[in-house]
Image (cartoon, rainbow, N blue to C red; front, side, top):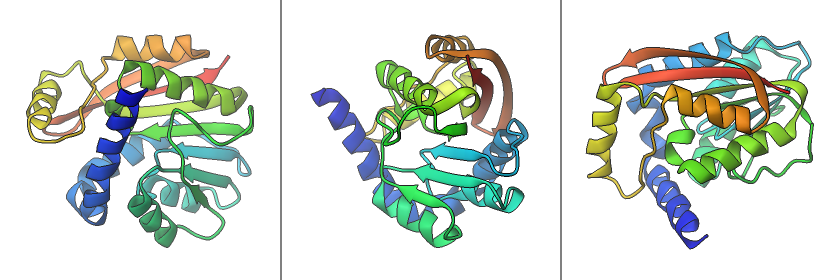
Length: 212
């Protein structure tokens, strides 16, 4: 448990520093991840959706425009990122403090959950726990969409190895078959996964599934 807390603290410290420049520094990357995630997420007009690790609220902002009647919620552990998300988003979108591995909701309350660029911050046990939590808060048949770095691409693996030498928070890349297995073990079925390139060095993957 101590190792997990230390890891979470390192990630939070890093993103507290990066928050103000996050959108500008990774504008293209964010645009690609939002586009691909939304494309896998057809919603009914009044759906309940949760964004796990919502960051500065870029994805929620896009969804708020596309689905003006949807009930949207974001969770984000970094205070500075939450502050930026709240400033960006309309008042009807709720943003609260929480980690992916411990979501502050009762079971079966959301129609859809999205989670982008979070798993590569989580070691295998924490990633599995986060996916179990997502499954728990989804209604039966509810849809999950996960977008993250692809460990299948050598450029992405090399970039992650370089980053590990320069940053305090470790990175954990998952290959497509590992992500598929983690989703299935967490209670998801019908996994569909696409791999693609955003720009060098990022090769990404987006997986969509439903709670069995």
